[in-house]
Length: 271
Image (cartoon, rainbow, N blue to C red):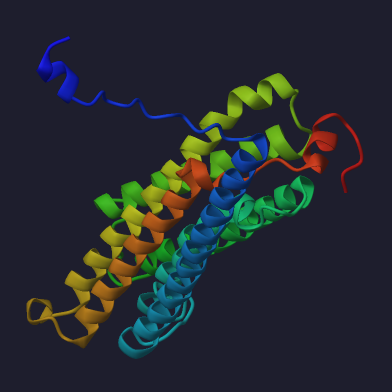
């Protein structure tokens, strides 16, 4: 052995410390708890932003757009459209998407019913909103053309996707329910098109806000108080949509099946 070899210390290999099953389980539990805390924080933020959007929309309509009316005043009847679309196609739609993860400890059957009920409420608001906007155009003097803007195309597409989603989801997962194999095949498409419809609704709302602002606010380039309010609504919608999509697509926030869910799938009484 040479002198250099004798003086050079041998490199020690790191010794792997075995992790027991209990330690691994404890680490997973800590990670799960941290994920749940993060989810709840973002979920609460999304709800607060959603409420702020509705409050700002009501403020815009009440302060700058002459409030609400029906067919007697077509130009004011239009105001039902942004209000009900905001409540239905954005706030309720977003909450219906989040209901499974937001109430992760509830039984599957009540969650299905809540999901369907939120969709039904959103659909009702949407129908009234569409009646309001078509009336405001058709009853105006002179009448205003329908379906000419990108906002109307994107918005109607979002409504159609939402409506088809509701029908397919109701028949597939609630009543009469298809077989398990068919439900497993349809579920990925149900999720994808549900998110797509929601994102398109956000896009349509942003286009509609811009369109209404340019028509109604004469000095919009100077960013008056009304312009600032409209832009604030739009930014809140973007943040709300981003948080909802993140919460519903992030795998670490996925709802873990409960024992009652297995009973439901196998035909047991889980109610």
